[in-house]
Length: 468
Image 1 (cartoon, helix red, strand yellow):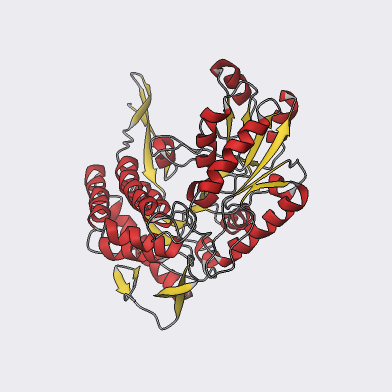
Image 2 (image 1 turned 60 degrees about the vertical axis):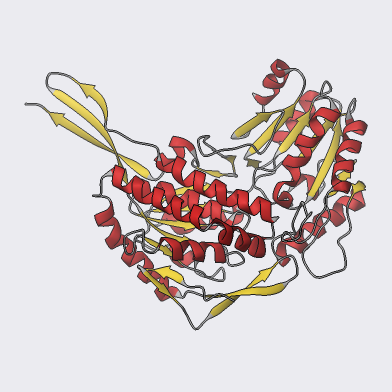
């Protein structure tokens, strides 16, 4: 096992207290990492506060150059990062390589946005300017489904806009973040970036710290609500990308053979462990049976297993708690519907669940009403369009949704009625660094990606000038 270290206040450090990292494909320990304590958090934030005072004075072009050097370092260490992602997260190695490529691309793209001074008013006697200025020290808390990509797309906009950042990866997938810390330690100014590992015990310490100006969190809605409470006393700025239970509506004019691969891929990407994956599939009765058969065939033919093995297409669920949670959802789905693919986990080490498709379900079943966040797709038959739109909207979540149809004009009319931040037509779970993602309802607060997402790491400062 490698000797992993945390980047804290400009130094790569070890700790006597450690954390084992489990390979979800076989439940074996593949890495042991240092575990931070409360004092480490205090040290990291204090160093970040000092570093940020200097960093905000660095011209934007120089800050951008530093962020692009981080992207270069990611590219230069891509294979080590990809193999680590597969070992700690479980995804297939080729998909892990894609995550590394995305991380590099997001790093560069998000750093490319500029915020010049905006003149709001200009008269003979008065000039009013809007300046975008950094917030200060950012706390970034990263989930386990895309451990490197999500670390980078919080890091890049924070740094380019003049902030410092303290990053906390998920305790089940910390290794890629620690490697990132190692490869950027000599690139970023001392103290500007710290990466701490905990066992889900230091989040409240970090998010309630008086010197944290902003929190960027991706994870569950209950945790997001707890973070909001911690942030309230000091009025911290927040970007919260939380749970989703995305619904897809298939209209009666859709061609099952044409749309089945897109629906299948959108539902089972990363073994269903994506916030904006397709989670609920509502299909009109006219195409229901044929589409169910098409999706079931794709799921049955999929190879699920160890992501490091040749020929495997889908990896395991990332951790034991999530594995057991997904199995409980599948059990309820089996009791209330008809399993047409998967449904039984193999009796072997690892958190392997075959891609599972369950039809003949209905609203009111927890597999439909809640987000399982795993490789299981519930399919619900409908007849009335107004009723199915109401069903899709009958959720506290509002991250994404989609409509599938051969008639774009008709599909567009349906998308206008869906209460989500993003709606796709004839696709789902398609995103990029240039496309803002803004959740609705309890799926979060704020914007990620695009210029609007980068802007979230700044605040407006108005300069109002009397020309005398």
